[in-house]
Image 1 (cartoon, each protein chain N blue to C red):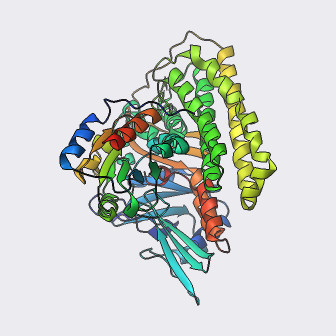
Image 2: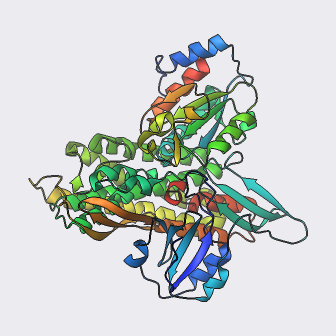
Image 3: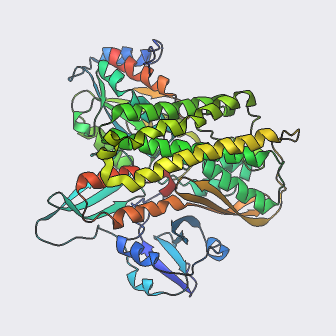
Amino acid sequence: MKIPHPDPTIGAALAQRLAAEGRVRPTGGLAIRHIDAGSCGGCELELRSVRAWQAGLAAYGIRFVDDPRTADILLVTGVATQGMAEPLRRTLAAMAGAKLVVVMGDCAVDGGVFKDSPAVLGGVARLIAVDLALTGCPPAPEQVINGLLAALAS
Amino acid sequence: MTAPPDDLVALLSRAAIEPAAPEPLRVLTPQDWANLATMQGYQLAALWLEHDRVLGLVLLDDWVLPVATIGGESAIALMRSAHPALALAQRHGDFPEASGEGIYQIGEGPVGGVIAEPMHRRLHLAGDCVVRADHRFGYAHRGILALIGGKSPRAAARFAARIAGVSAVAHSLAFARAAEAASGAVLPAQIEPLRDGMAAAERCVAALLALARLAEICAAPRLAATLIALRTDIANAAEQIFYHRLMMDMVVPGGIDTVPRLSALPSLIAILQSVRPALQRFGAWRWRRRWADLAAPVRLRVWQAIHAAEAACASFARFGAAPSTEPWLVALPSISGAGFGQAPGLDGPVYCWMRLEAGFIDSCAIANAGLAAIASLESTAPGLTRVAFERRATLLMPPIGMIDL
């Protein structure tokens, strides 16, 4: 399996914003903590494809971690449900140093098809500041990798 | 407060059912599950599904336990006929404590730990040995059944498709069949073989993903990558044919939503035919040693993947052998009625019951038999090492979307 070349347009706005805010990456790479805020699991399926490129991603300094305290990026999938609001805030609060929030999938971006449900709050941006949004239902693995590489380039 | 009928046994649990005050749902204790597993005689009955505000169903073997609200305070699992299980009825606030010298607890998820899913797992451990395992759900309650209510079956199909991405076709198919049964719609002959093939291809993907995850945690990344690549190929082919990598939103009440691009169907069949040789590596001794403690579940998943791939090929062949000029989508009659639909999922059928009022959904309940895996996981946990338990959970745990509707 080959790592697709990053699309320079994806995440360009993120790169500019990060440069403006002077955020740094303390680990020299990107450690990603994934959290499911109420997903159907479709985005996770594509994320599994991304994680299968682990060896290739490691060359870029990207790795997935289990502990939010060691993570640089919080990758959120799924609509922000009321039940996950507090865990999501706590996860972000547990992250040290630079905190980048990437939301993946239409549900995480704006609530998707669930936006009208009283059981959900809507997009993740209703709870925490979002730096990069990867749209799609679900986004293709190449799109996710391009977004992560753009974040790394920042 | 709505009282349950007298001949029902009520198993109370706290639930994330009220949007204003979501609370984690803990359906039953492992002991409850074990006792329920020994009970006989229950059959799915529409009576319970007609209960006020049915939210979902819990299944255990042939047992179907509708989860409904009563007064907006609790969730209640309703079970037919009186039984000593009534004595087990209890409210679940805190996790049950396992007592004993040297026993300690570890919590995982949803904030930290290896669990990224919206659930909490509490392990009682003695040394490295699991004494008790409990799961708590409800964090990801999305109000799907509330969204479905009041809509036409066609408009509500997108919610059923997004209950769980790994079984999007199965849930859509059960939902569509329930709506078609309730409305009395008659489908063109070519629809069912295509739908069956899609559902089987989806089951194959789900089994491949479970095996890939197991290979990852068993330090076999190349094997995992091979399986993921196979899944990715299937997804790419599915996108070519059905315009979506997970085949979402194609199966709708009344048929197929969009005319599929059938010229790409042979490529999907070719990929599915490569599943069997790809999985032969799981029989190699060097891999077998790594999951010796999971031989039976691994064999099951391998068999499921191969069988589903072959079933998909057979269904697509049936579809190809019976070309038709009939429409892909028929309109559902706007009538009142109730219907039951069923579709095969990876770990058992997906059930859907629906009642229509003048063509709109008045009540609906959806359940997946795969939820019984939670009971199996909890009841077999004692005595396992923590690593062995995590492996088993990786292989058997159903998607949270199936639980938190």
